[in-house]
Amino acid sequence: MNELIKKLKLPDFALETLKSCRSVSLASSIDDLHELSIEGEKDGEKIVSYDIPGKGEVKEALVSRVKNGISANYFDSYMRRRDPNSMLIGDDLPTDKPSYSEFTGNDFAELKNETLEWLKSQDLAAFVFRAGQMDMGFYGIAIAPANAGFFCLGLGLLQGIVDWKELEDGTEINIAIYTAPPFRHTHFDGRQVVVHERTRKTHEIFSYNLYPGPSAKKGVYSALIDFGEKENWITTHSSVVQVVTPYENRVTIMHEGASGGGKSEMHEHIHREYDGTITLGKNVLSGDHLSLVLPRGCDLKPVADDMAVCHPSIQKKDGTLRVIDAEAGWFIRVDHIKNYGTDPDIEALAIHPEKPLLFLNMDAPANSTALVWEHTEDEPGIPCPNPRFVVPRDIVPGIVSHPVNVNIRSFGVRTPPCHRDEPTYGIMGLFHVIPPALAWLWRLVSPRGYANPSIIDTGAMSSEGVGSYWPFATGKKISQANLLLKQIENTGKVHYVLCPNQHIGAWKVGFNPQWIMREYLARRGGVKFMHHELSEARSPLLGYSLNRLVIEGQEIEKYLLMPELQNEVGLETYDIGAKILSDFFSQELQQYYNDPDLCTLGKKIIECFMNGGTVNDYDALIEAESVYCES
View 1 (cartoon, helix red, strand yellow):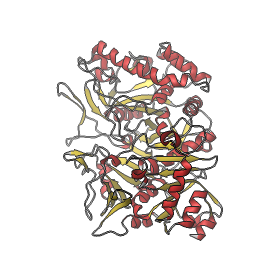
View 2 (spheres, rainbow, N blue to C red):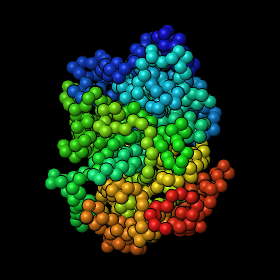
View 3 (cartoon, one colour):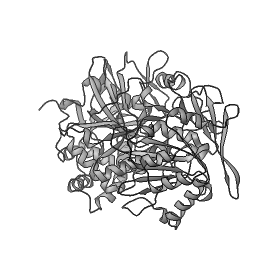
View 4 (cartoon, rainbow, N blue to C red):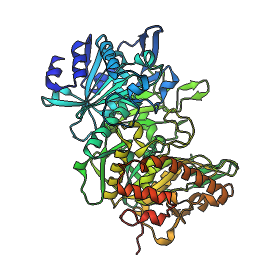
C-alpha cells in the first residue's frame, strides 16, 4: 500500500482512506477482481450484506460463481435499475443539478466525514482504472468495501483496470469512486444516491449504493463530461458501428438517444424468424403481420456501445467528426431475449465467453451457466425489465479500436402506438432525414420516450435532457447546448436521421426501423437522395419523409414511411400527435431560449421553431453538405 501511495498523486480523501482503513486488497487485474467477487463463498455463493443501525443485517445482493463468470442479483427490486434522479452535487462549482445541501439541508462536508470514518473501519478493495480509453491522462481509483467485489468487477470491466505498478511515478489520479452501501439505508431512505464533488482538476464520486449504473458506469461518464465541459469537447451518449455491405460499401453510423433509444441494438443483426424471414411489424389493432425477406444483412463492426469520445486530439478539422470508444467494457441489456435463438451473436458472446463476464438480474444458480434469456423476476411472473451483462470490448467479434469518421448521426426515439382511439406522438415514419439545425433541437429535448426498460420512470413523456446525456452531466445545461451546436456547425459533412423504435402508428415494429435504416443507407453509401425521393414531413419537426424505400427489390409499405396514410391513423390523429410533439418541444426549449448564455445561432434555431419554421427554414440555418446528389 505504501508503494502505491508513494507512486501516485491521490486526492486527499483517497489518500487518507487508504492510509487509515483496516486493510486493503489491491487489485491489478480483472482476475484479481473476479476472485474478490466470490471471496468467502460457500458452495459457489455469497451474500453481500451490511449491519445497519436500527435494522440489523440488510442483504444487498446474492453473488454466484457461474461457469461463464459471476452472477449478481439484488434482493431489492428497486436496485435492479438506475434511478434517473440519483445525482447530487457536493461542491460549489456552477451547476444546474440539485445540490446535496439543497436536498438534505446539510453540508456535504459532514456526510463526507461520516463516509471517511465508515470506510476507515472496513476491509477495503482498491484498484486503478483509466477513463476514456484513449490516453487523455484521466486516471481513476476505485475504493469499495472488500465484500462488494462484484461491484468492483463491474467497474473494472467497464472502465479497464490498470496495473498501477506500470504507471509512471507521480501519475495524477483525476477521478475517484468511493462506495459506502449502508448509507443508502441510514441517510437516504433506501434510495440510490451518488454525490459528485468537483474541483478544477479532479472529479470525486461518492456512491451510496451498489448498482453500477449511476456510479461505475455513468459516474465515470459524468467525469468525462465534466472534463470536456472545461476543455470544450464532448463525450456523446451513443453507439457507433461500421456497416459493411455485401458490395463492400462502408458507412459509419453513430446512434444517439435517451436510455432505451436503441444504442446497443444498433450492433445487433436484424432479428429473423426460424424460416429466415423478418417480421417487420404487427398491427396492434388487427393483429396483421408484415414480413420482409432480406437474403443477406450487412457485416457489422462495432466501435462504441454507449459512449463515444470526440476529443480534439483526434479531429481533422475538415468537416468530419471522428470518435473513439469511451469504455473498456459494455453494459448490454438483454430484456428482448426471451428464449434461445433470439439473438445468436449476443447469446454466443454471453454463454461461451473468452473471459469471465458479470451478469446482473439473471436467474443463474451457482455453478450453472448464466443464460441471457433467464431473467430474475421482480415479482412472481413479472421478469425484471433490465437484465444485463458486462462484456470486455476486446472479446467482441470485429471490434474497431481506433478513431473512425462518422458519416451518419441517427437519433432514436421510443414511440408509443398511435391510432384514432389513442392519439400519441407515435407518428414518426420508418426514418426521417433531418437538417443539422433540427438535429440539434432533437438533442436538446431528447425524449425519454415510451416504456423505457433501463430506468425507473413515471411513464409520461419526459426529456432526458441536453444531448441525452444530461442525467450524467454535473455542470450547466447551456454549456452543453452550446458545445453540441458548435460541434454540429464544425462537422458539416455529417448527415442526420431520426429513427423511431417500438411503434410506427398502429404497427408494433420493435427496433426494425433502425435496422432497416442501417441496411438501406449503407447500401446507398450514405444519406444521398434525388429530390423526388424525399418530401417534407407533415410535421416540420420530422424533417423529410421518404417517398419510397426499396431494399433488395422489396418495397416497404408507404404507410410505414408516412404513418398518416394508415387507416388507423389518418390526418386528424396524426395532427393531434404532431401537436403533442410540438407542445413538448415548446415546453423543453423555453429554458434554453431564456438563458442569456445561449449562442446567437442557437437562439435563431429556437426562434425558427417558435415561428412555425419549415424544413427549408431549418436547412438554411447551418451550412452543411446537402443530402441531395443533384443540383
